[in-house]
Length: 102
Image 1: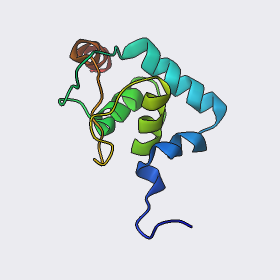
Image 2: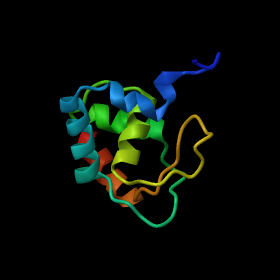
Image 3: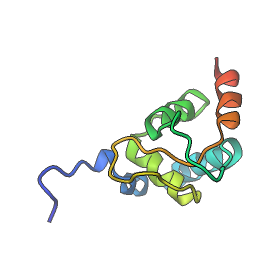
């Protein structure tokens, strides 16, 4: 049974709704562009990072699909109860992406 306020669009399980080709494209992009660090980077959220992917030759995805992809790539989440997740991502790697897509 689905909970009354369940929003799959924002759940990491939405990653499973992508085709295998889309999943591979997204996880390859994450692995090739976002470096993990030990601490959490509160300057970046799942919502902002998904837009970086979309703007860097990706395709439209929901926040939840991006969350699921980050988990699949081994990133850690600061607070899974938050709508927009914070991960252990390198700010330096995000700056490289930002400079490339501007």
